[in-house]
Amino acid sequence: MTANSDRSSGSGLHPLLYYVVLPATLFFAVVAWSPPFFHNSLVEWHESWQRLLFSRVCHQQLDRTFAVQGVPLAVCSRCIGIYSILPVALVVFSFFFTVLNKAKPYIVRIFAIVSLIVIVDGAANLFHLWQTSDLIRLLTGVFWGLATALLLVIALTTHRDS
Image (cartoon, rainbow, N blue to C red; front, side, top):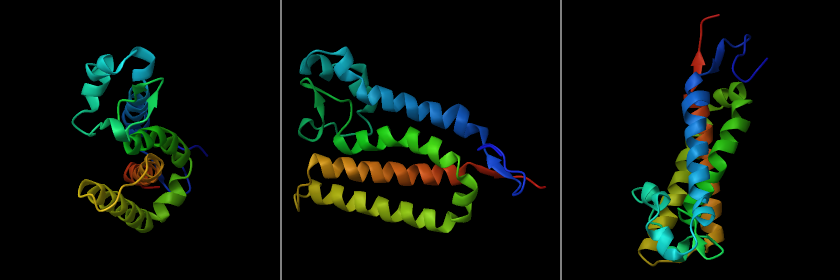
């Protein structure tokens, strides 16, 4: 039995997971971490294609972004958690898709709860109700990335007639 087929249940993972979703998430993870390896200064980072690529989906505030040798990553601490864990979680969870698919209603609820936590924390920071540390932002990103990977794996499970 492989992660791609399960003869006893008549289901498998859609090829999109392996040929589109996984390579795309891996690409975004590598690009998110790459600015310190290509740029030597904040000015270079600000003009970088990596920053521009993520500028529509991440606020990239410097005070909420990890830096390596003074050069910020391409995304904030929460987003780096999401982008870093997503490809790893997709690979790991793809081996358990049969079990995960049976827990589908719970996974949707887990995703909703984690999403709500991220939204509440983000809104509270935006409206200055509280200020979370970069570590907490990183952890909420990791949890949201894990929940997203669970949701993607069950969404990309195909059912075949036996």
